[in-house]
Length: 376
Image (cartoon, rainbow, N blue to C red; front, side, top):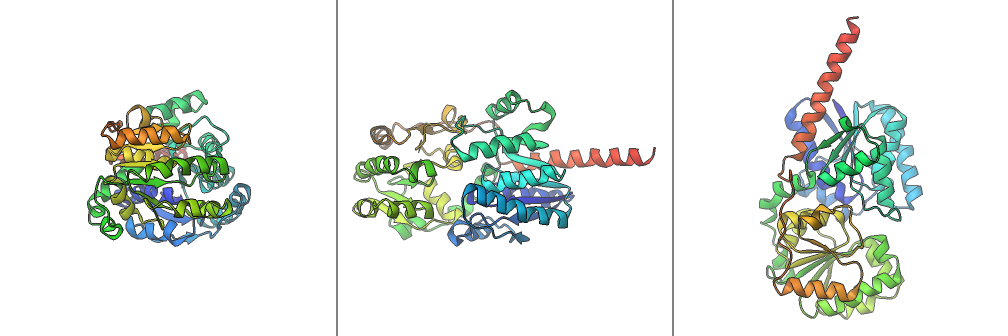
């Protein structure tokens, strides 16, 4: 089975790494890695190929940044040509970024089988562009691989036929568990002059947080209090740095002695940093999952989440951008009362194996069907 595996943004790399590894081990797949170039900064992209032992992409569409519509359109135009050239048996997309929906639309219109990994996640907030990407991709997909029971129920309510839905677990967890030992060899704490369990980690990049000045100011107000109690390490996303400058907030950030503003980290360094933190504050979906597996208390700077299992079973708490709530929940964690949580069902490091087994089985049935048809 010739499969085009699509990556475009940083979260995709962790998901696709486990799948390509499982395809190669299975032996009956020809996995081809396609990078759309949606993230093109070295710190946001290239280092992940090294850390995750991913092969270099066979093809990069080199799209770059732009508005949602422009970026999606450019990927579609370039991917359509590639699909005609490659003639794959399957297109596999992960997550909910613009690359996901763009390649899904092209595959569906050209009648190429489509698999969506991490299907069925819903925030029920259509102001989030990712929510639109998720909804449309799931409607177009032939194989919907889910991470939790809530995702299955969401798909059923939306009229997806049962035979398309496959509960397999979480491929991000596969990658995390596979790299924990290597991540432990990182010297990132020494480089930053930190001791384990004595600092917080901040990830802040979502447009709803960093592109609305009042919201960003509220988060900064909380950080001004928090960083006085515990060092806060902030690997800053390029978008966030741009908005801090645009809103004239650089001086407020620079004046926080306890806030350590650093460049984005590679996967192994960041995994080590997060694993040994006292708490993590984030607006990223994937980090909500990773902290749950690691047992690290997580405060999500959003009013909703498409990963509710991390709240109901894991270590995650929604705090929005309310400074008082952020500070109060942080203090609870620092005082030793953070959520312990449990690991959700099938988050066991074998999700990619299940995905590949399902695709291999489907392929063998298709081959039998073709053979039977040809014998008529």
